[in-house]
Length: 151
Image 1: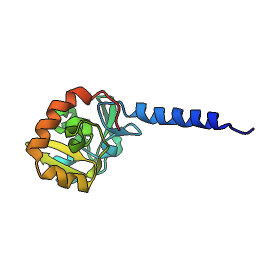
Image 2 (image 1 turned 180 degrees about the vertical axis):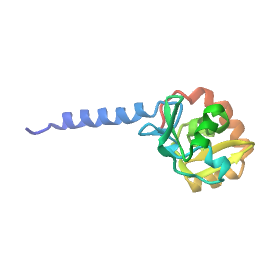
Image 3 (image 1 turned 90 degrees about the horizontal axis):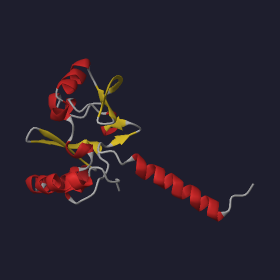
Image 4 (image 1 turned 90 degrees about the vertical axis):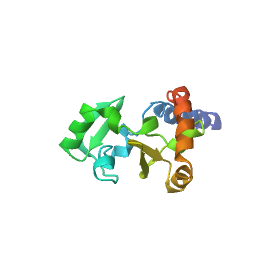
């Protein structure tokens, strides 16, 4: 049976809508994994991104957070807001520009005791030029976009 171009277009729209709706969460998660499965505590304790273990997962804010150790998971459980990346793990620079964008685990910064992630190293370099200014802008914008679709 041949698919008409109308049917193909309809299928494409459904697939695109599914992708958009999957990113409505205030937490950046791919396949249900917050921050791509990386351990948020390790950024603070090991000063680098460390892949978490699926056997050490903890559900928080509608996403599964993965940890490299039980100690990291327990620290997160005790004070999650200390470790959750700002803006739900969406790109900090993108948030300052008024939109939600995905992030890469190796494009990160700890500033003022808070974890910020960026889209990639190139965007992080822009972010680094005026962190205080971008943080101020993003803090003001985040409440208005946190529950909106990602771009």
